[in-house]
Amino acid sequence: MDKYRHILLATDFSEHAERAAERAKELADLYQARLTLLHAVEDLVLYDEFYDPVIPDRLEVDQERLNRGHEMLVKLAERIGAKEAHSEARLGYPKAVILEYAEEQKVDLIVVGSHGHRGLARLLGSTARALVNDAPCDVLRVRLPG
Amino acid sequence: MDKYRHILLATDFSEHAERAAERAKELADLYQARLTLLHAVEDLVLYDEFYDPVIPDRLEVDQERLNRGHEMLVKLAERIGAKEAHSEARLGYPKAVILEYAEEQKVDLIVVGSHGHRGLARLLGSTARALVNDAPCDVLRVRLPG
Image 1: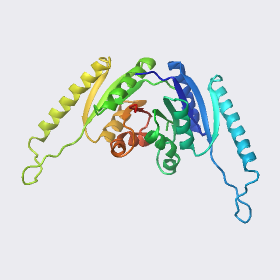
Image 2: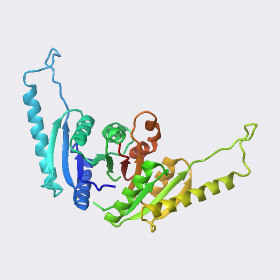
Image 3: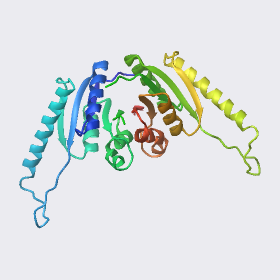
Image 4: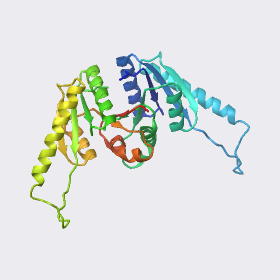
């Protein structure tokens, strides 16, 4: 069985994602694997006062949000002591972005944080569940204690 | 963040579970963690020709199945080079058995194999999904390639 060579941390910058990031870094060190931090910037559709979608500035807004996401990834990489990690922000629905990246970049382990799954948190955890169902590789769900 | 100290492999002895076992052993080595192999022997209710449940020999049959499960765990431990691992077979519904054991024995990582999730395999993968939802600790879902 191959050891992990490319570990992907999928993050939404929440509290549980921070813990997942630390675990991903720890595993990357143990396996001497490549580490990538990935954040999906979800598509926004903005409407004007007549509920018409606002098109003209769309690309500019998206680019700004991608830049901001990338900056946050770089800061996260610094916090977990993984300056050498590759940071990537992509536009799209989180599950699709993560699966596409994993396939394209031959990721063999996806690390993802997750809330407990009671009440509202159950809804929020849907990306982790979707990945466990559909990812082409191993998936580690990191749980925030308590 | 604490390193993993007690890794639990939950196995049903299928092909994907074998791969999960190898990964669990590898991680236990890397983390110098305790490794436990756990198998849930599902409750059987046997019926006679009048569809009355057969009660008298129930305990004996259960004990036989538990013994058989334990033997298979010991053989699995040998195959993956983990003779030092603790093997435990328990009677009950897999998800409940695994969660109970994890809580009781302060497991911090559950490793579980899983099919891909298309068609029939989607049904078979339900234990992995249930664990990802409800486990009190981290969960690694190991995927059989292809």
